[in-house]
Image (spheres, rainbow, N blue to C red):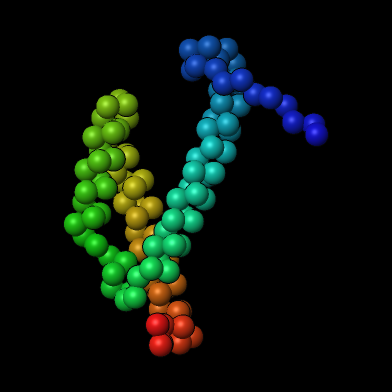
Length: 113
């Protein structure tokens, strides 16, 4: 196996643009992995819901956004930027869940359960 081991650097330890790019690539890879893991749970949630309208839960959404904003603030990340990212993610997840649930209804998988 020809995998190069990449030791992460603090931003202040990056001496070149390529150093910074390597760290951003490492972080992006980790984020995609986490988003894929999160998506597995979103898919499971869609399997557990019976009605497409269940995908939209305003109270839960606002709880998540509040938590994200607090976490962002504690990490010195712009809370508005974090909120925008999460609202985009949540909206995509809602549409995905609705589609999964509706498709299951159309195929008749919910009958007799």
